[in-house]
Structure formats: C-alpha cells, structure tokens
Length: 139
Image (tube, rainbow, N blue to C red):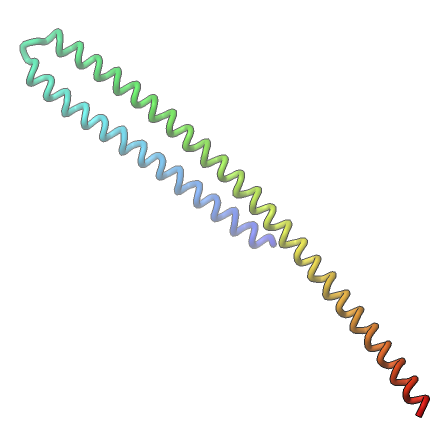
C-alpha cells in the first residue's frame, strides 16, 4: 500500500510540476507575443506619425497602458489556473486516499471470506466424517 501511495504522490508531484511549467511557458509566450505585436505597432505608429510627436506619445501611452492591463489580466488568469491545479491535486489526493482505503477494506474482506471458506470447509469435512462413521457403524 505504501508503495502505491508513494507512486501516486510521485505522479501527482510530477504532474503538478509539468502543469505549472506549462502555465509559466504559455504565460511567457503570450506576454512575448503581445510585446512583439505592440513593438510592431509602435514602429508603425512612429513611422506614420513622425511629424505628429504629441499624438504619437498619447498613442504610445495608451498602448503601454493596454500592455499593463493585459499583463495584469494574464497574471490573474495564471493565478486562477494555478488555483485550479491545486484544487485538482487535492481532489486527486482525496481520490488516492479513497482508493487506498478501498484497497485495505477489500484485502480485509478477502481475508475474512477466505477464513469463512476455510471454516466452512472444515465444518463440511467434519460433517462428512461423522456421516461416514455413522454409515460405517451401520455396516
């Protein structure tokens, strides 16, 4: 049982690490794509509005605020994803515990049934032996 529990714990830990790494990877990729898109937009804005410096600064400020808002949104998404993963981990551990308890009860029930079977077999043998003795005494 302990080996099964250790295997389940190892699998859960590995799964949690992989999921967190994937969330971090996706988070970084999303932020990088957004930054790349913003950089490209900024370049276009700079070249198109070269003569209109004031408007360009306003647009740049607006874009930077959008980036900050998006980064905050991504961080919230990341926290929710991590929270969900933690919840799933807890549920998996609870399920593992239930499986372990069921396994223990099943083993105990099996042992009890085997004991009953041995006892019934012994009772049947005794009854047969008595019956054979009775028959033997009659002849």
